[in-house]
Length: 182
Image 1: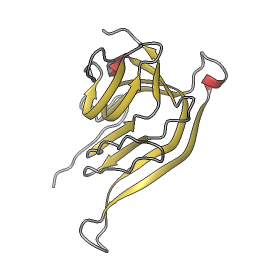
Image 2: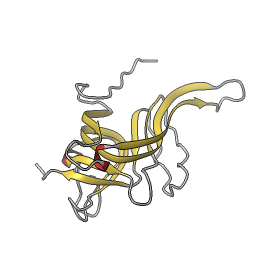
Image 3: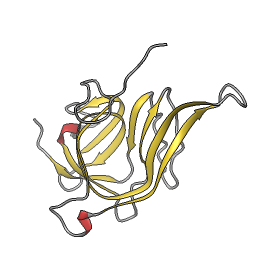
């Protein structure tokens, strides 16, 4: 059995599962409401594999997330392994960022039909909308793939989280800051 490293965050190895250079909750350039982000029911979950029968549970990872998050989040990332869906909103009408899979990089187009947003174009997203907060934001670190149950009220079944670091965030996300393609 070999040793594997999974990196998360800025300054990480070029092949990192999740490489985020900038993450800020709230904004300094907006209204009082835009300066705040509401997070409800944060959780840390240990993930077990009990496929070998009773009494043989094995910890295969963990998951950190929120039952709800609402507000503006500044996000600049060069790579994400996971599943993320962002509507272009008023700043990129008719466009979207739709990541699903292992290590999507910043300049890779991610949707069909075009036009698509790339990860490198996203500068900020609004989590939640008039109907409520975003309900499926979590990050996991896993030794093997796991399919998690969808949160209450989310109709889209989550994509199976793969081994390594996996980010999931697809519910009620809209871009508020998008840069032009390189």
